Image 1 (cartoon, one colour):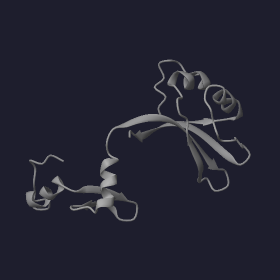
Image 2 (image 1 turned 90 degrees about the horizontal axis):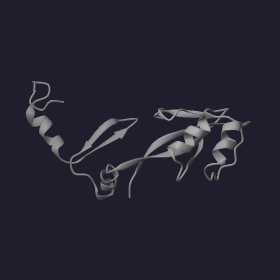
Image 3 (image 1 turned 45 degrees about the vertical axis):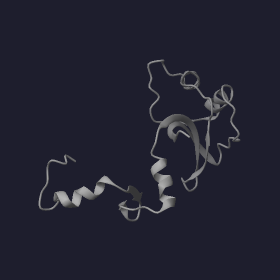
Image 4 (image 1 turned 180 degrees about the horizontal axis):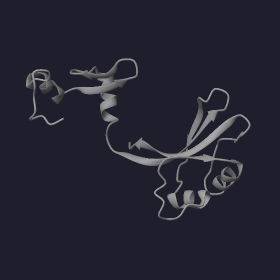
Length: 134
């Protein structure tokens, strides 16, 4: 929002308080602004620092379609993912990629995976997620 534009509905005095505190998103309550957050809430503020994209495996229960588990695939390089998925070097690899049994075996060949695949019960997806740097 351009802070030089104000109206009766959004006067300058009301918008001024957004200069401090933290914002928290809640599914039930929406966006909440804490002007003076409690000490525990500072963890949220710290979590908003630098991030890096890491490869992540997720699996969903076929019956309920709910997330059943996930695993960060440490050290998995984009070049290896392109080979597993048979994608060109120009592919930016955005989005989630569904894995079948053949692709999962190829993936196991390039990175250590702790999860045991069960394609009768779960659907598996590979994608990048944003992870906060320590």
